[in-house]
Image (cartoon, rainbow, N blue to C red; front, side, top):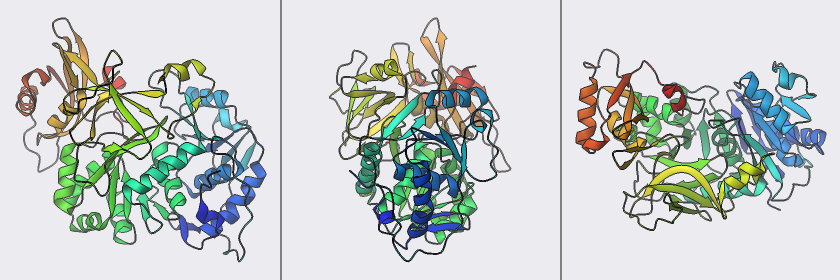
Length: 486
């Protein structure tokens, strides 16, 4: 059995969680989560209304202590999506913050309010339940449902512990670190990495509630040592840091800046490094696999890549015929497959989907990448949406997006493929141009096509360019390419 949070059982007086001006030490967290764990113990499954609050964090910790699988529910879920999740996971009750108004599918369930008032520091260790076995289900996190109804990914305690311990080694993460972030708590990035990660190490997390560059500067200028964010957040930091010495100094003082959930454009890497002297580290993971690779804290700069496999994780590239690609030439594209103790157990109630997701013991990620001579992986996109087969070439949307973003007149860019009688698929760019008093004349479609042809190769230039005022994104900052196509 792997104790997930040793500092909680040791009744440490060290700070654990802080959301705004509300905070709990490890002793206080144990005294709040312990009784809640006793109340929910023995349940088959529970739902948690996963707002970005202290209450959600306490509820998840209580469920983990009780050994009851928890289903974090996105408060922005639509009616049909929420109904599917509740029907599929069949929770026996829901945990929510007091006063939260729950929608129909959850409102009909028995409910326990998560009462969190900072209690006095206990003088004696709080008695906590005996933890479940390593293979016991810990969380059931639902996918975004891009290819059908969301699937419930059953994550065992083993996968959570392994991922967080592998990141400890790769990022040199210690109990002295204070993590700053403003990520939602219904998914892997914000909840498992951003809350359970600090608790696993005995460190603390400062959740901003809502992302602002001012809040990031304030927390990193105080005692924050690490920042987790998604590319949309780092894009705003990159845009402001060059003209904001307070923000630049705050970023320069951070021990580690980590971006995930989507690729961070090279232009944002470069602007943050130029302003602060700090590099941004990228990592690669999925709901089903948790974390697979990362640029290490002690490694040379590898901007534009997601680094090397984490300890204990095996990664390979395969071609269209399922053959392993041995070369590391930085050019040959293949699908990433993963195996290791970081993997999920199954898709809830979907044995067919679980079987289809594996090639022997290897999980088929559906992500396309190449590997360079240093062993770093560079993601070029999803097989289904980002691999464009045009004129006999396999082209990754990601490299064209980076080339477009290197143009001074481009603020945001996405690339998709569209059917073409001559080429098979033609490259289509969706562009948001720079605006504001300092922006120059907007580029034309021909300007951008010529720019990409000079940066990459003529066959990679976009044949069609659509200019938009914004790109559709989900809560994690990922561009919703299916909406662009629609």
